[in-house]
Image 1 (cartoon, each protein chain N blue to C red):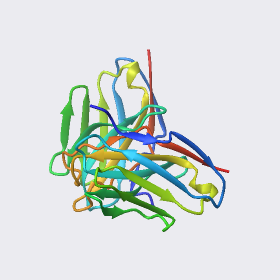
Image 2: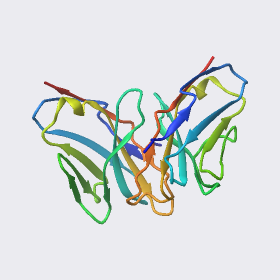
Image 3: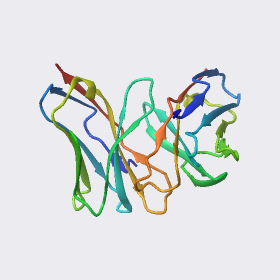
Image 4: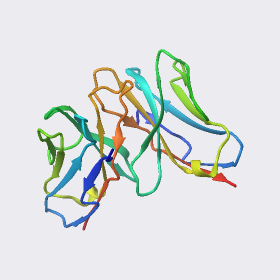
Length: 113
Length: 115
């Protein structure tokens, strides 16, 4: 069973507009969440994270929102740029699980000029 | 600062063979984790090594094993290869074990094809 799900396999957005990528999880033990970006032929690159004690974390153009009651998080990219085109993975971890991350299936974001 | 390196980058094996993949973490990093990425199952955690000890293990059969050396370099081994083992194997390194504020840096991966 997938404990972390990204229900949209792809998303297309116009340059300058907002990109919203969504992620749902089922495991109540998850208390730390991360977003990674992946370009072809490269490993994932860390973008932003959020602890379960917060509901929002912002870093430049990237903001992650966490709704614990709904077990849902989202990544907002504003404004979107063509260089943001990549596959985005949501990941979750539980306390005392070391560096073990449970990943979602990824969402391919395409930002059109 | 050099990033995480993985060797080889590409590998072709046949069913029944075994394979060893190598990962050199960023200098000073003591934790190395391995992940398998396939189109069907996505990115799945294999195991994590920290200071030469296996810290966590994912839900994979015993054919998948790993180890870490005193210089933090890690190897993973897959014995009796099956077609379903064809995947991109990613390694990630970090300073310590524990995700909070401890960024994991991924290597480019080793693409394994089993024929």
